[in-house]
Image 1 (cartoon, rainbow, N blue to C red):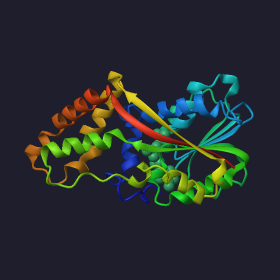
Image 2: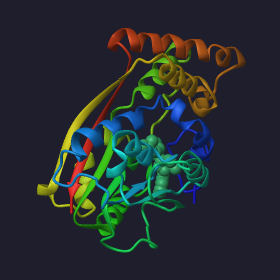
Image 3: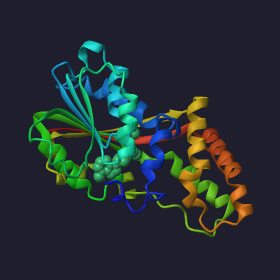
Image 4: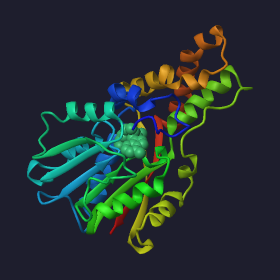
Length: 283
Ligand SMILES: C[S@@+](CC[C@H](N)C(=O)[O-])C[C@H]1O[C@@H](n2cnc3c(N)ncnc32)[C@H](O)[C@@H]1O
């Protein structure tokens, strides 16, 4: 399944290579934003997650939704059933491993395509999470349609995407320092950075306009370990596409150029600045 990946991802089989290092090398950005969304938006909504809930985290990576729930909810409010799914086998294994000793009463990790959840019945989940994945899908509206189909009437979907994906700005700045003549590294689904696009896709997928709310959120990553994780991601093999056409000498300057570009980002914002669109939709 993993071979049907978005053409603008930086490497073939990108998410298999990413699975084992994911949490560190995202600087926990996707986890920390989702954890805040759960506390500030889901638990204050008309349908907070409780012990009666049945939750799906679709395109979960290494189980980020489940980890966020355990981090933010008291044990007696954890959902009685949770499905964690991703179409990448390595991500599913990483999720299984990270959730082995989880406090969740019942969690199942499965390899599923978010765009075609055939084995999941209609009207099944009370909550559906799709965190920072939609822009990597080849057919995003199909995934929303599946979220809508599998959600119970009155159920709540949480769908997030980037407004400012900081590593893209930092990698581009590093590229411009070494080879400004070469093309900048592409990013999957850049249209999702634009305001209104996520909402449009979610409406296309079946949710009524009046049942959708979008909020914007920012996360400043300044903690040394998380900055180091993000720096490792941008300096290393996951971003080799940014160095296409480089000589050996130019390659050798890459890590330093990333280091300098991280420093510029931190000087400008006080940390590595991520901005997100957070969409909440009720069926
Ligand atoms: C940027 S990661 C986000 C992971 C996680 N939700 C998080 O909050 O960090 C995108 C994830 O989407 C998964 N993915 C991409 N296309 C998919 C599809 N069609 N079905 C299911 N998962 C998919 C990838 O394997 C990867 O784990």
